[in-house]
Image 1 (cartoon, rainbow over the protein chains, first blue to last red):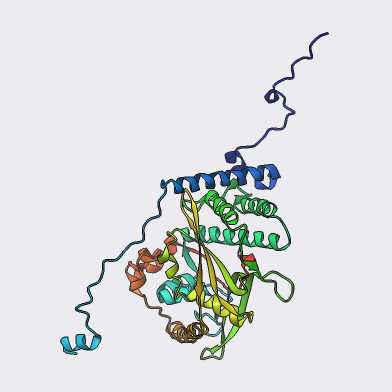
Image 2 (cartoon, helix red, strand yellow):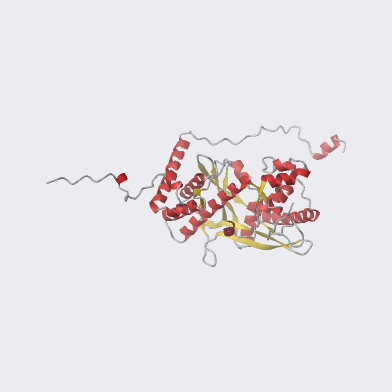
Length: 90
Length: 312
């Protein structure tokens, strides 16, 4: 009994539908043609980035810039407007 | 400089705005000259179009998600619809290419990322969208109401705008507003919203227009960076007395606006020039400024009476 002939590689078959499954390819195609699985690939990639970001943040690799702190003001010589006006001769 | 047609402006006094929203009023409060260029002349920097488009699609995407959820869709189904829609909105069909920007923090990818991350972050949101008396969800509500104040020709001023969402949390009613920013979301960032013209107008509109006992605004901010989006939520309270104070001062600002419009002169507030996009124009000698405006700015008429859907 002869073996079945091996099927040709998919890429060699012109009737095989090309698969678009990388986010770069999906972002460069007309979104009106997007299939639900391709939309899911976009969502999955965004989620993968989020997980990576949260992990990096938890490990301290991404730090939040500390808010700028103004130096403490010396209030010992604070003058009110009337005393300032007197000083200026107004 | 020619004043373009704008439905928000008086037909009697050229250059006098009658229908005010938070953007135009905020611009006027910041600097009358800035307001003149942006709102009266209808001009904007080329970069501002990117920020505007990014913000409009971000808001609209979240609004679509809220509508889907209100109608009973699951998180995954609603997200899938929104992502496909956002991809379509950022695709140039005539050129068959994606939306391209020259601002690394505001790109198609950072927009999609911000939308997905925000919706995942708040997928189990405790804030529930209020159901209006007509059965519809309280989402992207446009308001436009006549105030008690009029100009010298008897035209009444109106206040208008859009509320992202009215929601309920632990028995209290809040206006839920969403923002994107490049700033770090620390206490300094949120402190900027009290006092704040936009938050006060929203609080005022919620109480006066929708007759709801609005306790304040819940602000959901999205920090958009090149490599990440980060979110922060903060309650922005407003008392009734604060809202009344804001409203009374609005009347005073309208008097000042009429004075400037009648005189055709909108003075600069040089204390507001720090990081202002118009500094390159205002720093030129007055006789050359019109040329610089024509060369450096693009026409972008801001008419707050146009429903947001038509802006897209």
